[in-house]
Structures are given as structure tokens and as C-alpha cells.
Image (cartoon, one colour):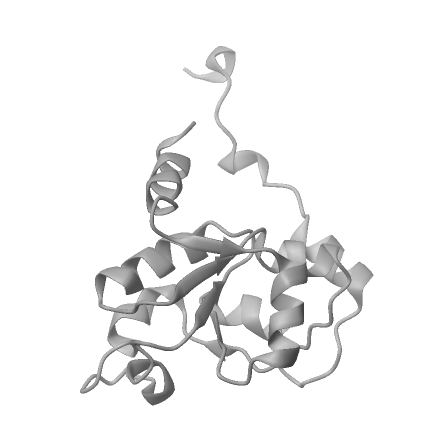
Length: 159
């Protein structure tokens, strides 16, 4: 287990997760639920769950409180509200939810398997134009291979 996965595992001690199929059901019945997508702008524009609030992870802390340029009022006033944090695969969202817990948010969960899991279950997503995203196209984008330059170098190839 690498350091990133260890960090996520530590956060999961206090952060609950919700499966995509359970969240899909909850979205239909809970009007107070906040879906918080913390992916980057380009990721969000390509596909997201309808009615999600977008706050990139890099500005999350400022968005969660009043009196900052990044403040998102709906989020800053939601300390006791049910919030599900969303990312691509479910790791960044766990860390973001953990951070929000440390900031006093009490009902935080992370979408287990992230947008990838949502798409794998054929649940609807929209793009920046509010057009429904083709599931097969989303699948190709979400499951693209990690580029060679980002993989662990082989010891035989190291100078």
C-alpha cells in the first residue's frame, strides 16, 4: 500500500462511504442532500451528477467558511446538513470529507467508487451544457490508462 492509499485508509476510520446505488435512491428522496463534486473544472465539465455543487479540492477549505473569495454560501451554512463528496474514484472525496469533518461538518460521506462507480451502474450524468452524457463515452474517459511517464520506473531502466 502506497502513502496515498494509507492516507485514504486513515481517513476512512471516521469518514463513511455510500455506494452509488444507495446514493441514487437517496437523491430521489432527500431534497436536503448536498452532492459536492471536488474534481477539477475540466473533469466536472465533461460529466457530473445532476444538481451537484462544484468546488475544486484546491479551494475547498475557503469554500466551506464565510468571508473568503472562495466562499460557497450553500456549503458554508451546511455544517449539519447531509453531504456526499464526489470525485473520480472515491479517494480524493474521502480526504475532502475528512478535512470537512475537521472543520466542523458533521454529516459527511464519500461516494464509494466515485463517478466511475456511478457510471458503472449506468446512472445518468450531465455535462457542462446540461446534456446527458453517453455512458460508453464516459466509460472510455474514466478508464483511460495511466501514461507511461507516470508509472513506477523499472529498476533496469534507471541510470
